[in-house]
Image (cartoon, rainbow, N blue to C red):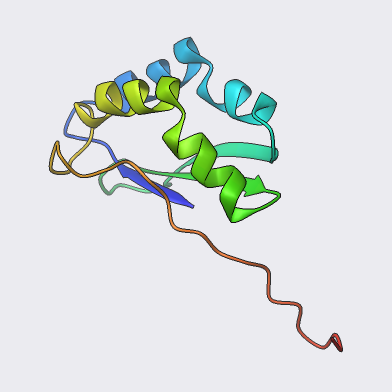
Length: 103
């Protein structure tokens, strides 16, 4: 899960950037990626996005994060975000909790 807070007036640019660069499509073709989605917050608050991606392993996601194309893209994306420009654009990893299943 990657949370992106668009800088003021940058929501449209962020969405266009994702579309033009085909970021989700490229992620889906990257080894180990099962799927990737971009979700936009609903309501009157600041534009916040979630990138939800399903990876086979944490190592696969790490390889994606370290991919030179993605690194360069992250630098461009940072200019559209309401974050410190030096803050890495990296998501948090979560794992499925299988409730009620016996190991």
